[in-house]
Image (cartoon, rainbow, N blue to C red):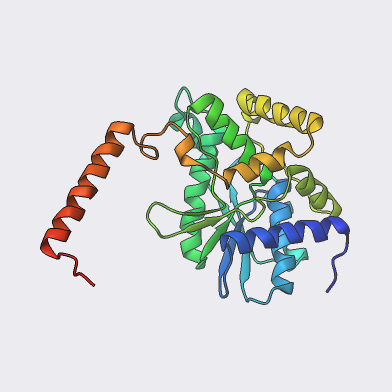
Amino acid sequence: MSYRTPLEARIAKKTTKAIVDFNLIEDGDRVMVGLSGGKDSWALMQTLDLLRQRALIDFSLVAVNVNSGYKDFKHDVIAETCEARGWEYRIEHTSIGDVMDDLLESNATPCSLCARLRRGVLYRIATEVGATKIALGHHLDDFIETLLLNLFFAGTLKAMPARLVSDNGEHVVIRPLVYVGEGEARLYTKECGLPIIGCCCPACGDLSLQRQRVKRLVLDLEREHPGVKQSMLKALGNVMPRHLLDTRLNPSGELRDSVALRLEEEATSLLQVQPLRSA
């Protein structure tokens, strides 16, 4: 089974590398794909279905769309597309849109709250459909932008992992498109004739200005210095804790000295109890 286009071959290769590098999908897995209807989730579903047909391991897919309850959302198009391609799917209708105003904190963006609520629904459905993994469509640009957003505006050095075990240990979230760029995902979705469905939330026009600024910054840097995004992604897997300021990773000199002294005392005590034998 050959790839239809060079783009498809490139995305399949990058996704396969991510699966192998981070042990994202294993034999017997039932992978639930969070299918929002956007370009990234369509690209993820199409790619995983392609790899499923070619893989040496056996795994199954089920697409799940969480409908937030906005009347103009085209969930019927998602259903029709999945049926036409023979994909197992489920559309979960919720009232997330109705409760957003009541739950939204003054300093929070609606998109971040919506994402958390949808994630909770996905966790519940994963249990109901017997999914062993939850696959999300975050791509290379998402990883980099999240890193910079946290660095610039949250005071933390953090991005997102390719594989994450939930706090209760019951779910595993995977992001197989970590090596795939946003532009590649967009072109692939278009190439496959998949319908991109925009969010109908009335607040979507007020997306974080910080994220927009970071996106433009990365775009400008990549134009001026091709390879910057790959360098930043590589940095996420090349962390040097001793060169950071977090004392939990790099203790102060006084703490290091106290630890060294304690280890020396323990070693001395052990030698007194079990003295070395001469040859």
